[in-house]
Amino acid sequence: MNYELREMLPGDGARVLEIFRQGVDSGIATFDTEVPTFEAWDMEYFNDCRWVLENENNEIVGWCGLKPVSKRECYKGVAEVSIYFDKNYQGKGLGSVLLKKMILDSEDHGFWTLQTNVFPENEISIKFHQKNGFRIVGVRKKIGKLNGEWKDLILFEKRSERI
Image 1: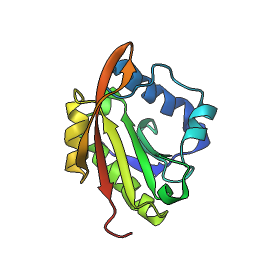
Image 2: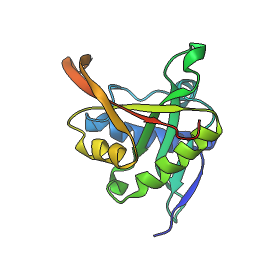
Image 3: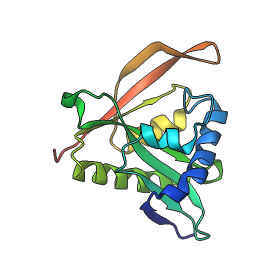
């Protein structure tokens, strides 16, 4: 099967949110319990470093984007990674293609550190981030509640070797 990696376009919003909904429904991908409007989603993410992966039918099967971690000037080069795949395309090695492209693009846009938070029970995501050069910074114990239950997060980071 052939896949195409391309920049995310505004018209991709519905499919991006459909894939995000699968992450919400999984219960192990995000603290979010509702899917935002695309306008709200769009405001949370940087305009740069947004990528999608399409199958041969031009259907988006995965996406990635970066969110700011802080509005403070000293953290302008630090961003939080979001990467989501349609459940039918997970575990096929496609995520690394998408993430590696975003890492290179993030460095071109001046980001020196990428970070992400993963629920401990999301073993696939843990292995995926480690395989792609992210290191565990630590575990944030009972950092937030999901459906009334306290959840831990594993904080990962990847420091640029170019910046």
